[in-house]
Length: 191
Image (cartoon, rainbow, N blue to C red; front, top):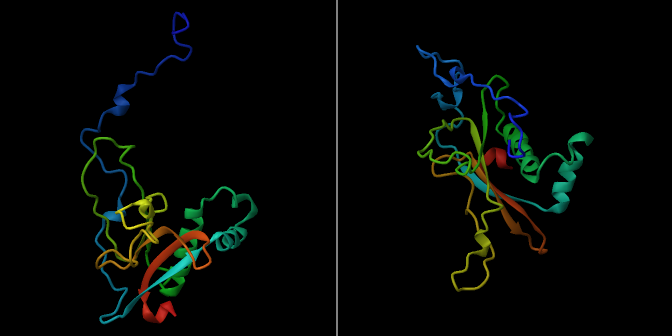
């Protein structure tokens, strides 16, 4: 119409009833991520330890080579490290095949859902939460004391929940840039 056409080339669909809620309302999807789950994963007195793992260009390339050929270039570094973390964390914890476990990735969706505020509650039992801090630029914060050597969390976990981990930009002793991943697990499985 901006070019002088008398009508749109694709006619609009005016089925506004598709946007109306059902009356009476009906639940069509169970959101199991909000269910309360009994925590029987850690025994009383379990000693937890923190370790950090560095993924440089050679480690990421080695993990990428393990992927099927058609997926090697489609997956991001976050995808590859998170899949590796999930696989080995699940094996280390020796979870039974019938146990439900959850992998959750934290994303910043504020720009996508403007105007939605509040805190979302997700049960954390038998869960692994991964957050990508590689673009947070913590190492660039200048307090007037010189360049930062490290900018990120000190250890894996989030308060009393040990299943949270973060992908943090860092460099190793050789000066290679890469990603460090702090993890908190029971001492017997960390070995």
